[in-house]
Structures are given as C-alpha cells and as structure tokens.
Length: 505
Image 1 (cartoon, helix red, strand yellow):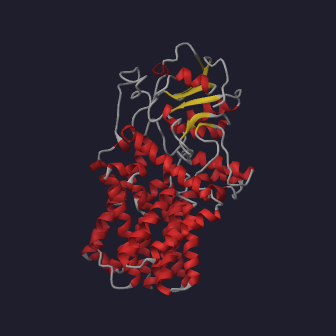
Image 2: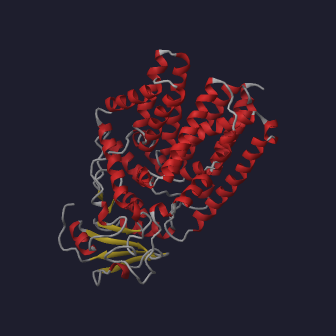
Image 3: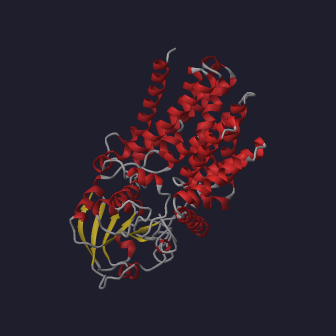
C-alpha cells in the first residue's frame, strides 16, 4: 500500500473523529464554558501583544492574567472574524491533529496500516476526548504538546543525541506554558519513567523543561505556578461545597426557597465510587490495558510505561479526596489516551487480532464508548439549564439587549453564563475564577456568603441576569430594588436600582 493510500485512511478516521466531536452542535449555536474567556484573552492580546494581558471586566479576580499564555496567544494570531465564528472548530481540529500524529507514529513503529488504524479508531471514539472538545480550551492543545514532549524525550533516550535533548526540553517548556494540568501530568510522567526505566534522564528532561519555561517567559511562569497554587488552595478550602447551588445552599439565602429545596451534590457532584465509574465510563479502553502484552521492544515498553503512569495518576487523584483539589483524576486522561491507544493496537496486532481475547475486549470497550457518546450527546442537548455546549436562544436575546444598554456591572446566575455575557455584551461581570487569589470569588462561589445588596453596592452592579429555571428573582431577596427590562425563553434581565454609589472593585 502506497503512501497516498496510507494517508487517506488516516485522514478518513480523523474526519470521522471530527464529525463525532461536533455533532453535538448540530442545529444549535455552539457555546462552551471556557470559550468566552479565551476569546476575551485573545482579543486583549491582539490589541496589545505581551504577557501582561489585563481583563478588568472580571470583577472577582486579578486584572492581570496569569493563565498559561501560549494557547490564547496563538488564538490571537487567527483572523478575528473567523475566530469569532469558528471558535467551536478549534478544539476538535487540534484533537484530530493529535489523532493523525498517533496514526503516523503507530504506522512508523509497526509498519502496519491495520495497527495504525486500530490505534486511531480507539482515539477517535474515546468519550472523554469528545466531551473535552465541546468548548474552546487549551486542554487538547496541551495534550498534543504533552505527547510531542514525551515522544521527543523517548527519541533522546534512544539516540543519546544532543539535538534531541534540546528539542525535548524545548517541547516540555512549551507544554508548561500551555496547560497547568497537562504540565503536572508531564512532570509526573518524567519522574515515573525515571523510576520504572531506571533512567534519570527523564526526570532531568522535565526539570530542564520547567527551568526553560521560566526563562522563555521572562519569569511569567512564576505567575502561572502561583495561579495554579491559588486554584488548588481554593478547592482545598471549598471541595466539600463543590456542586452546591450558590443560592439554595447559601448560609444567607438557603433553605427552602420559592424555586425548590436546598440541594448539595458534594465535590464534583459524585461519591468516590461514582467518580471512579465516571473515569472508566469516559475512558472505557482503560479496562483492556492490564491485559496487553506489549512486547520486548524499547519503544513498546516506554509507551506502555507512559500509559500506565498516567492511568495510575488518574486513579490516585480520583480515589484520594485531598488530591481532588488539583483537579478531577479524569482530567489527566487527555494525555493518557495516546499511549493507551498505541499499546492496545500493538497488543492486538492487526485485524486478525480483533478475534482474539484482547481484540474482543477492545471491541466490547468500543461498544461501551459508543453508548457513552450517545448518552453524552442526548444528555447535554436535553438539559433545561446550565447548557455546557450550546447557547440558549433566550440568553443570546437578553445579552444582545444588554449590549446596547448603558454601561454597568452585571450579576449573572448561573455563573457559567457570566463569561459569555461579559464577552458579548461588553459589560463587566461579577465573576472571576480564572486568575489570581480567589478569595474574592468565595463571596459568591461555591455559595453566596455576602449580602447581595452590599456586594452590588461595592461592585456598582446595575443589572441582574437570571435563568428562571435555575433561580428565581425572589430567591435573591432584593426587595423592590429591581425592575424587569427584558424576558425571553426563561431568561430575565433586571435593572438593579439599589446601587447609589459606584465603587472601584
């Protein structure tokens, strides 16, 4: 089979993967929780290219941004008009590039189109990767850089050549400047591989990459690390409250309200057992990993050790509650799918291997994956509120009205619509959570702990935007201080007249 035919197979699988990742948007306006923050960051960087990016429109976080800067900076290089319309395609496209890299590496190491196709198909239909591309985030890009950094490090281990050592350190530095979670996963992998493979060069590569990230960013990496530690501290203080309703579970506004009783779903909304079930449900192919005979090749052993290290990290972070402050364990699986898919495909060994026990098990995992993908699509499209994939028509209508309204701060519930409201309306919002010390965010999240009239007065709030399926105006106990400006399809925009003085946050 010639190179054009080999390439065509890879492109066809990548095309199918792209469709699976975007079908959830059919007939709807794509949204996403993090999308609007990164679009705002990219716009600010485009206006003033530097690492000193400031977003003063977020009232409950630091004005200077300290997220890893590489991804939003690259977004700023895209044409603004295209990005404003095609933002929904960026994450799926990057993830499909990752799939093509997997296909190419597998074919290069095995010289088998069938093995490469099995690896690519495993990657294409992993539910976790599909759910992760519903929003514009740096995670798929970080996962791609994670893979590149580890593969180049393996090339250095195999050849001992200085050029590959330099390339490995540089790739790792770019990863640290792209994603905090994937950077943590990379550091864990480097340390684990040094122990398992008995080669201290892996740990050395990770350490040099981190130092290089500090140097390339002229010290901005220190802000990234500090920001990550602030986020960890926030979740350590509030992990028992995660999943709480900000109003119904509030010590000031909670109890039985007009819109329903208090509710609390615990950290990440799940028990430990349920979290573990979700980890396996989003990455069913992990079930087959312990049954793989990975062979005696150096590359096979390294990729298997890489996959196992990340799976162990994901399971530990899921089972040990204090570690959940660093993020849910399943967040590390974005980096683990590449070596897992390769290892499974290598163990199957081609189309004939699908009829052997390991192949049958992988096919069963594929069936579970397809069922999970279907559940994901149906679930997110049927949610009555807190839409994480699409933009409700009513929200777009009231935000459009807000855009043409006089300038003023906006309080939004649920909070997941605050980023969109801020980006599309041009109005500042009572929200944060992205950067810096998050103690101000604790005024309202996970639950409201300050009287809203006092908070509104301090932040010069002029508007209140509510999804009435999530909370009613009466639940906020604002008295006669509001008047309805616009209502559409469950969304209500109120003018708040209780603010008498404008204060600087």
